[in-house]
Length: 288
Image (cartoon, rainbow, N blue to C red; front, side, top):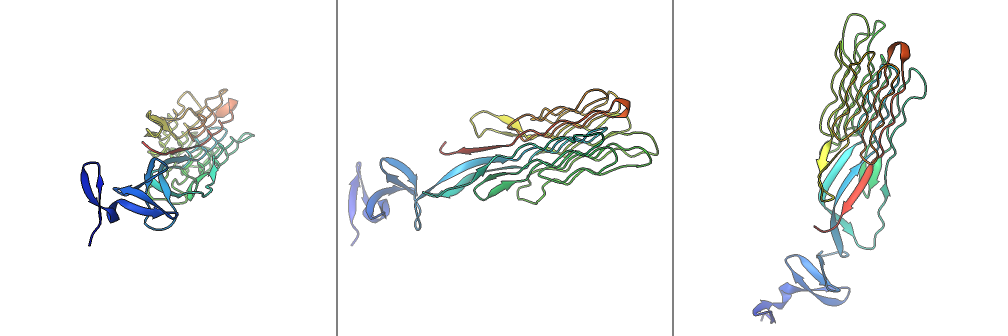
């Protein structure tokens, strides 16, 4: 015979509204348990836990130096309803941005990965010096500009290693042509491939992604713009700040705590260094 208890003005089956937690019967309703006056998600077996939303962005890649590709954005991973176990330690690591190359010409460096629990976002790929291929990463680095008999080079691969959903996009290719110096590729962004360079302009960085996990919409993880041998440098993707350099002006630095790529350095007779990638960020939200 079923047992009932009056809850408010309604009689309910006792078995459906209580659960034993650590030896004590606690009130249960709609999959939650009231413990010490607070409603928490109820687990039918195993220790009590909670769910969180997260945003994990790795460090952006550094831009290359001398007619160079922009750095790729750090890997961008986000989800809601991620389960955690109570009284358990979880690792949180925020990846640093990759440095630009320290000499002329040189590739930049890959950004460092960011970690929350079992979630890892890969650092952004490096932007390449002229005539070199961009680096692989969370988003790929842009290819270096072409010239000196090299017809074209490829941007680095994004979403490396592969995740579902994708953590980023490929870097842009350099322009192709028969001779002369041509535009480098923009760094890949978290929502868009880096732009391919042309014979008159270097590629823009791929756009970043908007998130409202903090309660305000913020765009992060844009790719770095690529450097140019003239005034046709690439712009940073949205959510970034690493604009491409021009002769005598270095590439821009990726915005901190956004995982944005650094801008590629300018080329030709007054070649310049690129910009460092922006540091990543980890945001964890509990409750609405």
